[in-house]
Structures are given as structure tokens and as C-alpha cells.
Image (cartoon, rainbow, N blue to C red):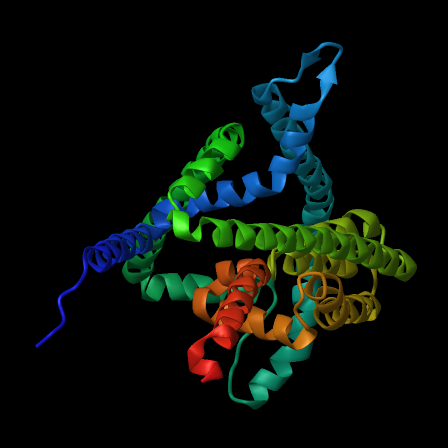
Amino acid sequence: MPFPLSVEQKQTAFWIAVWLAFVLLLVALGPVLTPFIAAAILAYALNPGVDYLDRLHVGRFGVPRALAVVVVLLLFFAAIGALILIVVPVLQKEIPLLQAQIPAFLDKLNDVLAPRLREMGVKVQLDGAGIRKLISQQLAGGGDEILAAVLASAKVGGTAVLGWIATVVLIPVLLFYLLLDWHALLARVAGAVPRRYIERTLAMAGEVDELLAQYLRGQLLVMLVLAVYYSSGLIIAGFDVALPVGIITGLLVFIPYLGFGLGLMLALIAAVLQFPGWNGLVAVAIIYGCGQVLEGFFLTPRLVGERIGLNPLAVIFALLAFGQLFGFVGVLLALPASAVLMVAFKHLRRHYLDSSFYNA
């Protein structure tokens, strides 16, 4: 015969079920929550600046928090605009030059690959005229299917683009209100924690906050070191666009794959346009290959991992594991999420070592 549950046990089971249902609802609303999560991450990073301005006094008057939020947001978006202004001139300079070089590049490609393809029984010309002929044949052979595929792709792509535009427009609005009410929101979250756990929860939150602050400082240091490294390497190799490409690669390294990929693409384009033969491409391969080794096996484990208490092996495992589980977003959040889990694991381990199950 089962034992009857006490009133407290019934209440505990009820609230656990409510919180589980809430978590499942959040999982189901995952795509909708993307701008909210992005805005919350940015608000956490920018809130110290708002707090600093909020504490300032100009004469006898303090700075209103709303004004502090506006100033910080303007500085943040000005920094993003400056980065865009660095990238756009490089692209404007390189794309026309690249278009002018495409025919000569296709002729070289045809001279190298066409004879080998003919030996394998594939007769195709890889120069401009041959590629145009191949495309026209494919369009003539399956025009309806290709048109249907293009329309379907355009429909899906258009929906995705509209979603991204809505997200980009929504994030600044959410960011403003989150920064404006940051401390009030934290107080509400703390007020929802059961009183028996409030002291322990606040202690864990303080540890997590300290670890994430260390993570941000370490990540900024990695970005600075890599920006200097790539700029210096490309300058030594003689690239005309060394400074903007190196700065772009270094500053965007916090976005896994995207920063490195964009910088590598710009450097390869510059190598094809500026240097004859393979010299420029070899220089780019050496500089960016060594940069990846430097970042993956030294800078990130040492400057980020050690600051949040993770050894290099744990950093590499966290990046691979979160990438496998959650894709690109998982790689982006791997280290800060690992810092949070490490705090939880440390308290769980302490509770386990103090339990009667362990000491009996």
C-alpha cells in the first residue's frame, strides 16, 4: 500500500510539474525565443557600462538610467557600424578586380584540369565559353524542374530572410527594455526562488557571474591578439589590404567559423588579385593555418579556459560536444554554458561528498 504524501510533498510535486511544463513550452517556442536570447546575452554584456553611467553625477544631478542605456546602445551600434565600414570598402575594392580576373582564372583552370578530365573520358571546357554552353544545355534539358526548384528555394529563402530581418529589427528594441529594467527583472527572478534555496541560489549566481565576466575578458583578449597576429602576418607577406582583413578576422573570431571563414575568403581573394602564381595563396595558407593552431590549441584554452577554470582538454571537448548537440549556436555558447555547468557540478559534488550516501 503506497504511503500518503504530505501537503509539502504534494506542493513540491505540483511546482516541479509546473516548471517542467514551462521548460517544455520554452523548447517548443525555440525559434520565437531567438531574438530574446540574443538580446539577453547582449544586455548581460552591456549592463556594466549602463551601471557605470548610471552611477555618474554631473554636478548635483545624476545620469538617468534611460539616458545611460541610450548612450551605451549608441556606442555599441557605432562600433558595429565602424566594423561594417571597414569591411565594405575592402569588398568594393576587391569584387570588381575579381570579376576582371575571372576569365584569366578560368583559362588557367581549363589548362590544368581539362586534359586530366579528357583522360578520364569527360569532355568539357572550363573556360568562359565552355561553362556558358554547359549551363545552357542544363537549362534546356530540365528547364521546368530547375525553375520549380529555384522558385521553391526562393520561397524558403525569402521566408528565412524576412525572419532574419524581423529578428534584427526586434533585438535593439528588446535590448533597450532589458537594459532599462535589468535589475528589476533580476529581482523578480530572485523573488520566484523558494526561500529555502535563495541563499544558495544567489551564491551560485554570483559565482556564475564572476566566471562569465572572466570569459568575456578572456575572449576580448583573444580577439585583440588574433587581430594583431593576422594584420602583422599579412603585412609581412605584402598584402595591400592586410590591416582591414586582419582586423576583421580577429574581431569576428568570437563567432566560430564565420569570422575565420570571412577573413580567409577576403585574404584568398586578395592573394589571387595581387600576386602572380601561387605565392599569395601559400602565404595565406601558412598565416591562417598557424592562426587556427594558435587560437585552438593555445589562446582559447589558455586565455579563456584557464580564466573560467577549464583545462584545455575540457575546452576542446566542450566545443565539440555543444557543437554536436546544438549546432552553430552550441559552439557559440559552449564555453559560457560550460562555466555555468561547472558551478552547478561543483555544488553538486560538494553536496554528494557531504551526503550520508557517500559517508555511510
